[in-house]
Length: 287
Ligand SMILES: [Zn+2]
Image (cartoon, rainbow, N blue to C red; front, side):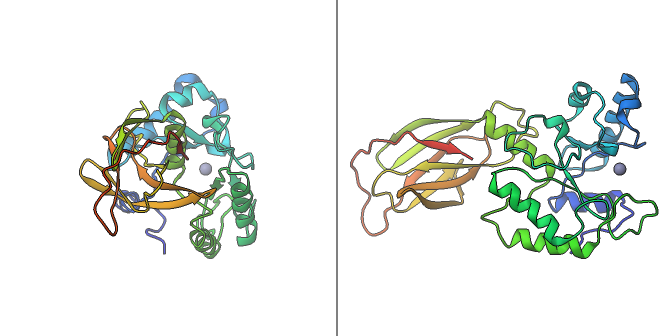
């Protein structure tokens, strides 16, 4: 159910942020960016960001939705934001061509306005391992003059459909997906040690950890006979799952880059741990 109602206020937005929503910028004055001088553009980019950062704790304002989907000078936009939303109505590839103009689909009475229409774009994105971004500019048409309002019932039915298929769709805030992609593309996994019943790896991305802190999904091929494993990082247990890919067993887990060595330990289910050395497989994948 909706966590807060319009008109928004800072305490409601803070609650939404704590609940996992992203509070991002849509500027203060809603101008068309291509009509602004560089200094006026900088003011629009920074004032909304500074205001959000002053009021919302626990996250940083790192993305913007362009008013009217007009980017203006993307090089200047990129001085303030890691990604920005336009609305050219296309599925975005799993590594976007241009983070400063990510395409979205307008929803509501000027675009996708039924559950079936919205779902079909999500399915199209899944079919090509792509990214589907929706633009919803007003809900229920209660704001006078709101562009392309969409009904709350349509949004909720769509969310129910998406959350019923967690193996097919990953649904996350715009800025979280942008950070995930940048981390994934910058990430490297190196083996610190392997032998006996444990494998220790390091996951790094060399990005600014103050906001590039989205967990990446990592999988690691398991040696023969490793039927049960635990994954540890800094004395914490990470949730993990064993999957088979082409008959080869892998362990899959989520970990934040640059937060310490990760150790995969073979668990002995029925007897004492084997003391024999195993030769470590070399295949890792970050997804
Ligand atoms: Zn707008």
